[in-house]
Length: 289
Image 1 (cartoon, rainbow, N blue to C red):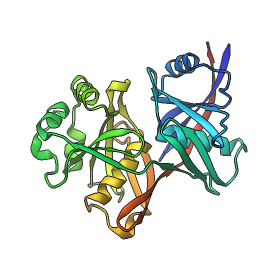
Image 2: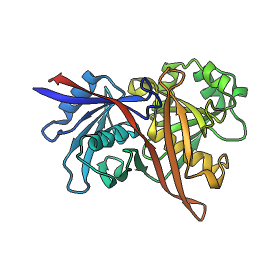
Image 3: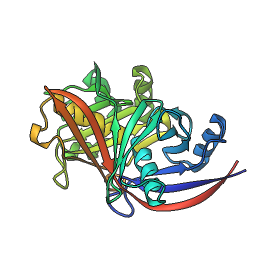
């Protein structure tokens, strides 16, 4: 059996930037085992499978090369950008049924896709020494006035504030230690960031998820949604800027990416989290099952 997979680079800042994702448009006949095999053969950090839903406009399932995950930001952007480019959807509001819940997706006139994530949940604050050791940096290179904390807007990540771009680029991750800590804390991985940026963005980020066979990822929608909420909670962004956030990622990998985000806040409580971007380099490939 041959399965047609579309590949594209979500959140791409340049033609060679962004985070590659696979998308299978008609996946109703595929079993969980089939989808896992396709994702493994595609080999990207995530592949999305679109199915019919009786609860939303689409049901979308997300697989890494070795397991299913509840939600994936860049694969959602890629999925709906592909649907728009194929004329399957037009500008407007849509819903996707995911394992993280039923979430809103907006397609704008220029095919810019914005996805809603779940409201933020703030979890455990972690020890600085263990995290610094797993990144092979000094504790002093981690910001001292904001915590290392597990945050989720659909997927749990450990958010790690670094003082400078130089320190962020100096990181040499110990993937075995990161996997161990990620498994122990029941998170996807590390989202490491600094407020020092290259192009006047909100933050510059690197993301490590070796537990899911993703050593480093070029663009991570869910993590930057969580980061937006973290920055707001700890007063690192101004109220006037919460609808116009942007995150640089993938530069260390020579895959420049831009992830846009906006928050809706009422009475100091975050009511909505949106993450947006485009996709480039749509191609087709056939996978033999």
